[in-house]
Length: 323
Image (cartoon, rainbow, N blue to C red; front, side, top):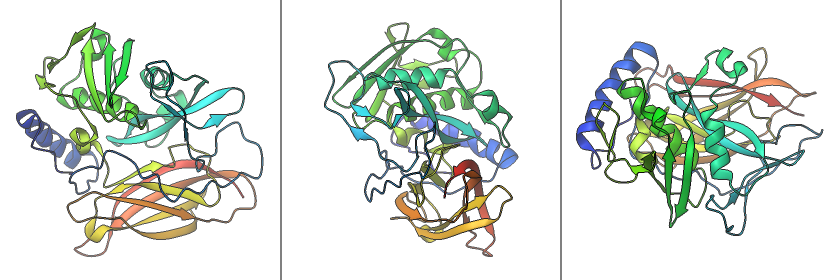
């Protein structure tokens, strides 16, 4: 499993590492780990245009940062969608690892608030019924009471329901979901938590120490070895599709495939991250594929074993393909 940072909250993180290792062995494949770069790559932008109108935003389009608003929301204006909607990411779990999922919200400058409220609604029925299903660690009834963003720090005030129920993995998981959802915006580097207006230094009965703000690096144990930031789960792809994120794999090499609804490989790309074999590196590639009509498909990532060359950590999720 990914290595945990040990320079922050050491006792708690060691406990989490043990728990996550047990869960991973019992339930799912694992990848290697290291220090997570908290920002997804934004270079090499390619914005393919879908050949037909769509109710969904085309995933390969790039968000545009707006002028700082007078509100307390992050300053990024995410992808615009038809009908006055805005597309943001929320972060759910697939096979106990984080995955970005698109949500359309009413057009607003307060995109941070909108993204958190969408996160607290949890997976849709379709997402819960998917194979594998998408899940959330955030309890029902959690309410966003306030959000203040200044100098890269988001202070989020949540209702007490946020710390109800669940064990250590669930508690860490819900913190990770909030941190990743807020740090998708370039004005947010770290997140501080409050409950009912009171700063949190020890979270829940599990005794999770939050004596300083959290960032993405604190929750790298919840990442797969190849973490795709774009495209999101269920996205409508451009053609070519832009695939970007971070990876920590043997010799920094892994593979991305675009597959059709029957599982046939339409395109395959050998990708090299900027770092690997014990460290997280970024990647950002564009992959053309050939389909005659709009259809369902999937994006698949995996890497090869250093021992025998067998496929490891295969991860697949649905997308919509366009000509």
